[in-house]
Length: 563
Picture (cartoon, helix red, strand yellow):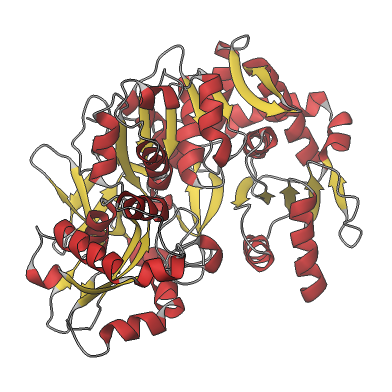
């Protein structure tokens, strides 16, 4: 299906939506213990006032404005105001350490840094005390007062908004609609990456607007749509697929209080659309299974508020057994595929076109082909401008208009895209066999006793695995045998436990070749986590760090050869 959104911009989509639906409900968020509701005209008024504040602070077209904040209403207001002011938004993940935040602020040359409040200010102060300052051009504004941030001059947004010039805001909004072009740089997003230094992905107005419109076209829209957003908007997945599809399609957007509160918020708000990462959907599944509720009619739809028409998983591979669990119980759950460099959506399963085990068909406006070595290539208006100040890195992935994704995949006869692994993550055994570990890991994680799995074997003569058990399921298994489970240290090393996991691993890998079998494994006493650098913020494995953190365990698995 072809589509041409070559003239679309985010600022124009927003202006048109605010004018068309001025009196309609637009946004909900909880503050002071109560749900607040805003109409489109009210959101537009706030964005214009914020744009006037930016102008008063000296922000000019092309200036970079960093935002260091978790999800909140001001995040959306700032994002749109930065674009109305024709500046470049650089969102910084709220979970990053002080050194990482400072690197991004300095690397992009941010003129202004917006932060949520005292928690973020404390992290900036931590860096300032060690390294004695930020770039001299940087100014700081906080959404909440920061009384203890004496070493850094941080203004409070609430005070600045009281003096915002309404005429300036209206002028900036008019000029943005008239003069912002699709080629104008809109944002720089730093990829956490699985290895190496973060790179700033440059996306222009065309990238963002076309991808939102293509995604909306693939999923369709309904007049009563309510999107419940809980993923960090500093990531492109939530920003495009929650915020910008809301601008393009209308309806309401509700901000979850926190990731942990999402299911409770869904019961209150009854959303029709929700996006998430696989771990979120797996966690709901495991809870219902552990409680013995999984097969009760209507329980799974009710967990999401009873009105959900589509859920989309992205950011990491979705296991087939999870997709089947949802779809067999009346909740459409499809897998999407993309990356920051593609704004992000390349393909997505939809209620009208889905095959479990694939990430759907390319969305309208997006081209996909498979290179001779199996790498997925994509072309279209969604492909990034390049990496900020990294021309060589840009040239390595942009070739004749095609973006080399670094992922391996296949297109079937019906045009559905299946991801088979990461090109750079391929294991090449000492026998010269090429193995995609992500595929084997997805098979292992389909077992309810396995929470996480990492397959290892590069330049080795056989494969081993690090397994993080599902402790609740393992303890339940022991209780079913009679008596309570032993202490965790004994539980993970008990011969019966090891025999159980050996049997389960062999069952899960029974359909793959002999050289793809896991010969040895270790049960980990803790899950892999982003805080230790073992996963990215989107829960992708950082294999190099995992290998380093568990090097002794891995070497023990290879001592003495295969069993």
